[in-house]
Every structure is written in C-alpha cells, then in structure tokens.
Amino acid sequence: MEFENLRFKLEEDKLVVSLYEIFKFDIPLDELKKIGNYEIKEHEIICDNENKFNFLISKHIINLKNKISNKPAVYVHANSGIPLIGSNYFGIVDRGTNIIEIKPLTSCNLNCIFCSVDEGIDSKKQTDFIIEKDYLIQELNRVIKEKECDKLEILINPQGEPMLYSRIVELIQDIKSQKVKSIAMNTNGTLLNEKKIDALINAGITRINFSVNAIDKEKANDIAGTTYNIEQVKKIVEYTAKKIDINIAPVWVQGINNDDIDKLIEWVKNIKTDKIIFLGIQNMVEHRFGRKAAKQLDWDEFNEKIKKLEEKYDINLHDSEGFEFIKTNELKKPFKKNDVIEAVTATKGRLKREMIATAQNRVISIINCDPIIGKKVKIKIIRSKNNIFTAALL
Image (cartoon, rainbow, N blue to C red; front, side, top):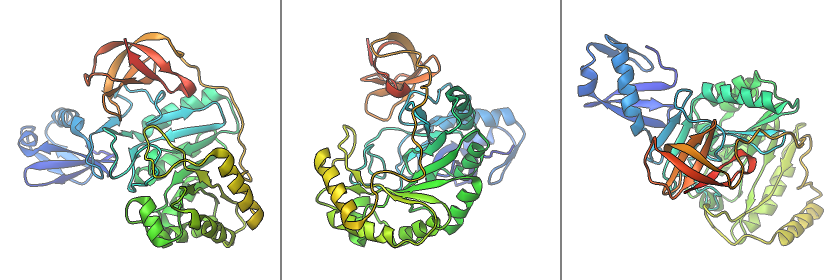
C-alpha cells in the first residue's frame, strides 16, 4: 500500500507516522506485529493484511499531534464527516467578494508578538487542523461553481504559515486547473528559497503577499518572537519581485517598529522590477483572542500618518495596482443569527471549552461546550456573518 500523505519511520518500540510532514502519530510495534508479516518503506507498507493496517491507522490517528507545537491535531479529510465551510480556522471562507480564502492548516513557525489569531510556537490554542488536499480542492470546485464569477481570486490565507503545508505546490497546481483568475498567498517568507519560489510560480501562483515588519535585525527577531533571518527574507522578496507581482504588508506596531516603517518604504522603492510591488502598511488591530503587543492606534490618526508617508516618499500606500476587488453573490447560508437548530459535535475547537459541530454541510463553533464527540446538541446561532457560524448551547 502506498500513502501519498503519510511517511513511515520505524523506531525502537513504535512506528512513527508523519502526516503532511509536520503532524505525526505513533503505532506501537506490538500492535503492528499482530497484523502478520510486514515491510516498511518511506511512503509504503507491504503486509499480509491491508484491512488490519488501515484499522491501526484509523485507531491511532486520533492521537495526531503537531510536531512544532506538540498540540493535538485533527485531520479533516473527505471521509471525516467534517465540512469545510463554517469556520474561520480552516477550510473555505467566502466574504461575498471575488476573493475566496482557503485555509489548508493551522500552524506557524514564528511567534509574532501582534498575531491576531495567537498562532505560532507559544500559541494558547488547544487544537490544530490539517486538511486533505484533494478534499479541499473538491469542495473549492463546488464553491467556485456556486459563486458564478469569472474574476475569482483564490487567497491561500491560513491561520499560520502556508509553506508548512507540505503539498502546497500540488495544491496550487490543482487550483490553477479550476476556473479562477488568479492565485495569491500570504506568507512570512522565512521558509522560502529561490527553488521554492520557482516551483510556486511554475505551479500557477500569480501573487505573493509577504509579511515583513522590520528591517533592523534585532527588531525583526523581537517582532517575530523567535529567530528571523531578515536578510534572507529580503533576498527572497527581491528575487520574487522580478518574476511576479508581490505585496509587502508590514504591521505597524506603535512604539515598536516606528523607525522601521521609513526603512521599509525606502527598501521597497529601491527594488528594481517591471512587476507590480504594492506596499500596504497595516495598523495593528487588537483582537479578542489575539496577542496585544501595543495599543491599537486610532484609525483617523493611523490614516493621517499614512497620508504623510505617501507625501514624503511619493508612494501609494492605499490602492493596490492591478488588483480588482468586487462584490459578488454570497454562498447560501443554511441558518441565520438567532436560529435554534440541532447539530452533532465532531471535534474539539481551537479555544478552551469550544467544540466544532456539524449541521447541513456546515461546521459551527460552539462555545462553553463539554468535550464529547458525537453528541447531538441543541444550539442557538449567535454569529452567521460570511457563512462563519458560532453558537451557544441551549
């Protein structure tokens, strides 16, 4: 049996099974021996009883963990019974525009001090998610058909770093075969090199959005919350800018990287290319479940600062050239705010005492819910915007 998404490694008393490279679970060797004769290769197993081995996979994958954070993880695949619409954590998000967000995993190699979703090495999130590539493409194709728009952009925008998704190149190739105008990706850039950039471009990516928050080495490390090779990231950004359009999106964290904003503008203006480079400086926004590295700047004051920078450097920091943002039809919503429905709990959520439930081909986050899987619950929808659903138990 060959497993495209699994990799096997025998250790003293267990078989370590890696899923999409950064997730893993173990199968005890004494259980493996009970299936009869077997031979393990990197992505393949030869054994006497395929059904028994598949049973072991199903039995132990519930103990899946993220290698980076060591947190429990959930594998969402075509037979998992977990839909891909309804959550902002994973899957597919449609906000009623020509941009469809896809979130193939939750995980990050950095620990940014302002992270709006508290992702990364020291995240307080309880659970991680990893989505089967083919399942994601299958459901994306269904959404594309329902959208009926010939100017769709697919934005790979996970809660974390997309380059941790080991099948990112194949994912982009499959997206390219769909009826979409462009494919973009948000990344911190730290896991990229020239070879990987070329592979992404050959696969079909049309724009990369880089999060670069400081030019100074020490400041870049401080903001990333871990070691961050700013010189390597700058090199990759400059290499990419010669090949495709890019967006550089620093977060302005008041009182922390103020001096670096001018340096970032000067650096961007000196990048030589005939492609589009847009510098979109973002205000650090305080989120309920995010990290609060500084006080959020008042929007009027922030916009005034941006206006002065535009005048000082003769640069556009507002409107991205070559990017078309249009409103479209929204996906149909099976329920609205204040609806009372029944759902079945499927897995733990990312927050404490949060469960992910399913109903009418949607996932729903239930707050203050006991961690019992497979339980039928009566709930009241308290959020339904953009087909992202939150509910409270009744």
